[in-house]
Length: 240
Length: 313
Image (cartoon, each protein chain N blue to C red):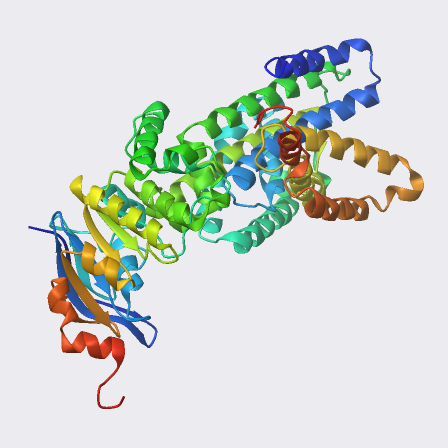
């Protein structure tokens, strides 16, 4: 069953077409990798799904309902959480307060929110750091904090925007484990990633964007041998 | 000890008038409490929610005029203004918010700056309604001595303090700070940023308006240049919070004590008096460079450094 359906979505900024006629769906419970060269429109697509940009054309459906006219906070209430490429923790708050702020979305009261926040922190392994001010956290932990905050809103689907960028190999492995555990909880994941090793080992399916168009969709294996994808990444064989 | 500190401060504040202070000292105390109340209101919007307003005189003046006009037109006691100013200011805050809260950061600040001036010019020109530059004078004063005025503003100030504390420790407080730190991130975490910014503005506007209504009763005379003053109200409010400590509970009070006493000290010196705004400007620059979190905000940091205690904020 498809949880999220992107239907012929286009997004133009003035004369620039960032996305044109992108259609695909994300199935319940899967991890879908979204890849493509720089400027391919991956983050723009996230921003459309998340509600920051209304699509110029087309629509986005979540659980069969049209969400592409809603505000980001409404989409979050619907059950889509996201993280940002440039990490944006609430800098002058402690790690715990950061997570409490987002847990309030589903919590009845403050005790409830705190309970949910602590649970999310234990899940991602940030419990020990809960009293630190988030400004001082190293990058790896800030990326985890982003994911924890998104998880505290109890999403059904999580959009992860380059959560692996800048992490060292051991942090990467740790995060791969966390993402697998998130999926095991029944949360569907769409992830943008540049690390091919990560994306190929994590994803059930992969969608490739180039110049705002979808050029391929399939299992990691199929994508790895698709001539269009190889051309997009390595350039045209003849002009090379 | 720390647990009892607020109680000790409270007790001192209540006993102060009984030790026979001069009328002038009582006047200064009233001003200190009033400015700290306005500072708390500003802090809610500017400090916690991050929406820096340069136009709090609009709310202050509006509160003062809603009390004054009750007396002027309907012959009611201006004390009703303390109650009336809350709904009046809430409605006006909604209107101001509808226009200004679409803007972010410096644009919001500029819009509120303009708003304060718009209100002043409007009050000056609606001569039939507001009396224009002639202002409003309350002929019969309620009390001659200042003691009762002091107790009234003290109760209002304590009320404002408790309200701000209650709000900041609730879900609203977490949402305000989230909006301050990053609006886009907040909205993608399910926070309706427009709604919560509007709530912060309404609370802040209503509290400032109550202080304005008190001012009408206390001074007995207002005109647009006094209550809608850009420098004496809007800017001084920001300074009170900046000097004391942005987004701290006690910051506005500490700031108000320093600012009011400093202003009186400078004004009472004839050779410095005219330069008091220049000196305030210099003070603000020094504070921003050396104590960016204000006296209360950086005091916490210092205490932490020396391991003298936890975090009182």
